Image (cartoon, rainbow, N blue to C red; front, top):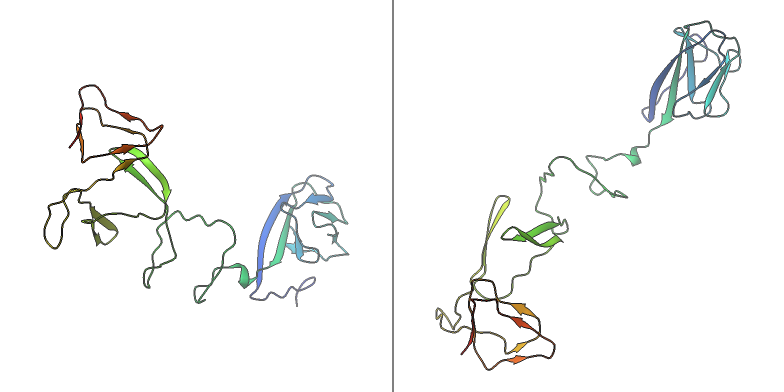
Length: 215
């Protein structure tokens, strides 16, 4: 026969236990994290107490013994709460929605096809200088660009050479109007096919020792 009021658990009940060491004649105990009213069991030195006869728990934060504790009595609080399956990640569910941010410290592994929706932000650097942060899409414009994916690595080859019809590589093309400020790289020379138009307010900077040739 059970001592006190038996507690029946279901598969949707989660619990935790909090212990306190009583001082002489202590009657009031603060329960860390609180509790749901009528969802707490109290033990004194391993013996289950009866709610309303041995203790009261009415405010969700404190428990009051109706008989003062003795010095060094061990008072245990068994706290029960509902565990909703809807609040957990279900491994067998086809689709799930998580609200808020999701922080993952390990790897993400997919057993299915690659997702077309999942995008990871990356940083882009050129010669050690960051030129873009948080980029989610790379768009390469021009002919001669090739991509090769090997497992989780993508090799990108960018061709800046001549263009032409079929297999011909004869023509080098450039725009005819300069609309943005530009500075020739120090220690380098530049060449453009003219004639060119430089828009008002646009500045072309040529460092000392460098040349810009228009042909």
